[in-house]
Length: 314
Image (cartoon, rainbow, N blue to C red; front, top):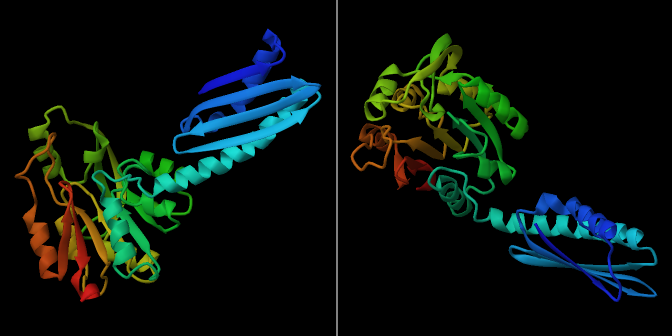
């Protein structure tokens, strides 16, 4: 954080300079948004303080005065702290309109569909299966920031523990989702965590393209069906279901009663694993299945397909 302090009609000694600069550490929480800080202290019978903080997208200006230098600096920082917090909140609120946490902007497409698809007031919720991280590459974190809540599922307990800390208002489950219920099933944790899977065939296929991939740990976790999750945690089907489970997506979809439980939107990973971008690895069997069940592929991001329930929009 670039801080420029100027004394007018007097000279700051070294101890006073250190004192003033140390006080500005109080607004360090906003340094990622601050371009620079310009502070002028003028002495004319008493001390007059003028401080301007230039943000990435805004400016805050405060002033005060006092007969005592240090007391005046403390007073200035009390005022400045409040001003910076308000400005930071305003900037972050504005920036959040353009933020995306998904891998390829899926959350912004979902936001568009919710705003313009007639679902803004319908009691939105989500089910994020194979969520992995609480924020990074998350299809649901943008919705969480908007005040929407739901259920997050991941078989890796390390991620689950962290998610519970940062997403305390979501329901977070350490389990798997499969085509049938199992009290205990082996889950393979990989050295690249986002390709961890129950499905050994999917792991072997991924290893063909990235031989350095390897299983680092095997754990046992309970597995539930999609419909069991719907029944236990949702009064009505979630508005959005994000499904990223490395190879088992079609089996899980086929095992669900899509006539009884019809989410408005599905986000489904419809490509097979590749280390680099590929144009020939789309899983069209998932697309055909969704089409047969009256879901339209609204968008494809190169990784995920976003499906909308045709019955809900016609």
